[in-house]
Length: 147
Image (cartoon, rainbow, N blue to C red; front, top):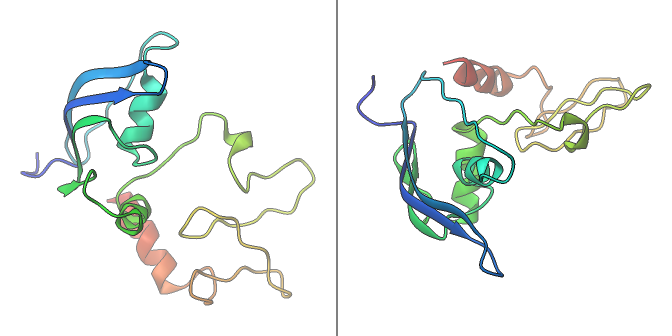
């Protein structure tokens, strides 16, 4: 195992308005290349935990670190970079995911920021910085995700 965990959660709590406490004192360490499953009954806080792990929500209390970055003190811009380069999402309800293909629709390739890009007049797509979708930058991202 590497010295720095990919994800570290220490005494994490999440409270919502109305007094709902979704998470109470969660402690979790996940190392790089380690697989982890989150299981439990309906209403046990699995989705809330995943949202906090993916920086889509912030914990009410406790420490969350992704690749050594303390999420609590990070700006929204920094969190967007963490999501782009450190976190991968697989949506359970993929049909509700932004840019999901409907039957009979032309497929659009996702950008680095998770938004679907429209096809160019020639039928291809443009990369995040205006280059072709198969640019070295996109290939680098794919290689990083396979590590």
